[in-house]
Image 1 (cartoon, rainbow, N blue to C red):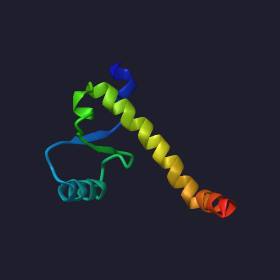
Image 2: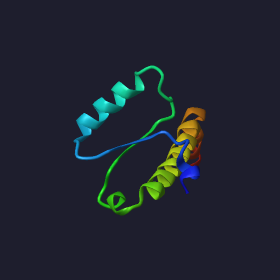
Image 3: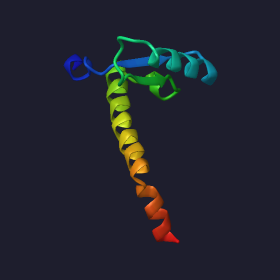
Length: 86
């Protein structure tokens, strides 16, 4: 169980507004000696009911999917799809 998530750097934030969360994320991302692949999350009504292990696994999967989307955007993949639809 723990072995599956122990190497996934994750910061879970609760009880702060969007502006505060973004400020924390920016500060942490600019700090030296921290992993560059930290996953940030804020607690939601749904995630508040999950076990931490399950939440971290879900966050990791979401991170993988978002990186794929970002890479496809860089490659213009979605732009090409839009042109084909027109």
